[in-house]
Length: 329
Image (tube, rainbow, N blue to C red; front, side, top):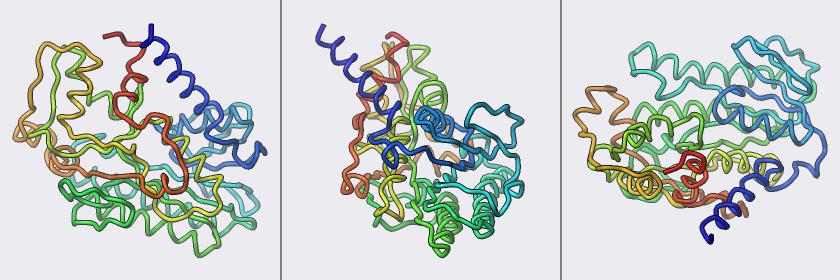
């Protein structure tokens, strides 16, 4: 009975955050948002929250999607005139880092889908007669490169690598908006978890067959965050006019790859658990293995927490209980 009550309380907390955010943006005033990448895993969840709060949303999408009340889609930023008016712009566009093997061509797509879209967005902001007050622009914790067990805050240094170079260029492109008098918040996203998509699909595939697994030696760090906390953090940053610069969007308690496996086994019955050897991973996915899977970052959301943001699901066990609640054991 106690476990049932705890689960119900957590579900209610998540529902309240999803429906309202931690606060109503600008005291509940209806606002106009422009979102790039709005059809993705994070963007789609954010849009639903904004629409429920009676805001209006314009989404840049290459997909031919049908709009609805207070939601419209555009296929090209050039279609938006200088008289377009948005209170805030949220830039989430970018091809998935894990969407395909890292061939030369796919790496070019990863880069161009972020850098070129961001530059086009800045060009639009320059043309606008009334620019928005704030730009939230995605980045990633790959910004830091790999630092072993070192705990990284927003002041942490970086080491060379494809992800590090990509994130530096991405943030540099977005930061140009500050020269237009626009407040810029850079979202250094960790591994975003939730049901129905995202990283959880691949991370939990073996568990569906009763086999727990971790990658390589299992000691690499996984800086994760629940999607509902990502959305709540974005709302928090939209509201706080005094906040700008980079923010780590990660849960306050990162785990190792082995730690993720152990947590999953507390929520899903498994027959056995074993490592997926590093050579096998390198054979399967190539360069991506050492960049994303066999090495990681131990990242902490220092600036968010100093600013007063509270995570609804700060521990992996809480997040997994929410995500797996309807799947049984």
